[in-house]
Length: 391
Image 1 (cartoon, rainbow, N blue to C red):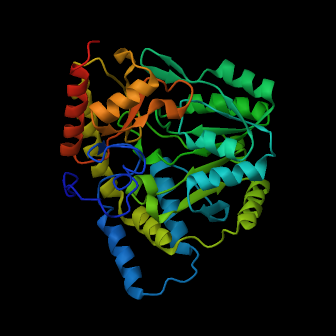
Image 2 (cartoon, rainbow, N blue to C red; image 1 turned 90 degrees about the vertical axis):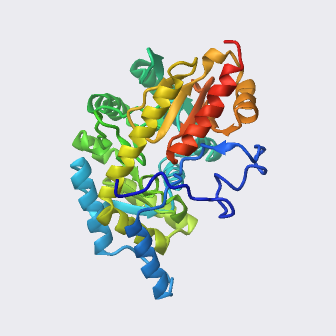
């Protein structure tokens, strides 16, 4: 490989949420952290060089994206997703979760129903509740190790609760589904039928595994483009989360105007200049880095699959993302007991499945985006801890 993903970078004492806040969050300081979804790899060299050049300029005043930025977005979307985007339809924000909250406030009123499919990325629920909207859950079906949407339940919940918004996770975090075009079409048709607007979080789009293809929700049907906001960002793909940049695509003029008005209400205008620089450099120069990264992550996934195959723990085969969903229910532990087992016996800092909502009980989420030697040590700890329990 051209890029060295085996290199261990010491992230301690860098104000890293992943590494420097174990004590504050009640975790043993010697626990291996494989929880929050950032990577332990250096950002691409082209991005770091662009940032150095900007730093050397030495002035960091108010900035806005220019033509080169939007050219980079257009080329990336066209090349990777056959998606033709228009610069005028973008609204830049400091993050996808920020955008979710802004869209919720822009498009609904307090008490309105918003539906999600749990288990799912837990800030979805938080964004709904913290903005005083009504959380409606349609639980994903889990059969024979595979997750799917319960369309009948989904539509019934929409009708019964007069739902206004659906927040879609595409690809799905944490269960790893890359929704097919047919699945997205069925969801989108239900939402159109009942006047439900779709917010599609597609931040993991660049991590569809071999044999699976990410479909941008807005490309399924022209009507879907007008009935959706597509939330994208380079931050997961190129390990840039701390630079706070996301690109929200809203083709519907009325919805985009409402979103801009909400942005004015909260006083957000010009984005982080470093985020602009990094995003443009990443989408312009770093496709080869991403391909090697995906190959390395595929190797990490193979490693997990092999290491767990003779244990009672079951890997839910992912179709996308660099996160894996592990079924630990055979251990027979309550959520509290499983949390204690993972943290204090296995000495691992993971994301408990219960935080992802209904259907997450008894599962754990593991972040694979780390050097294989770190992953190996973590899995050794987990397997040794499991071997000490009579299942």
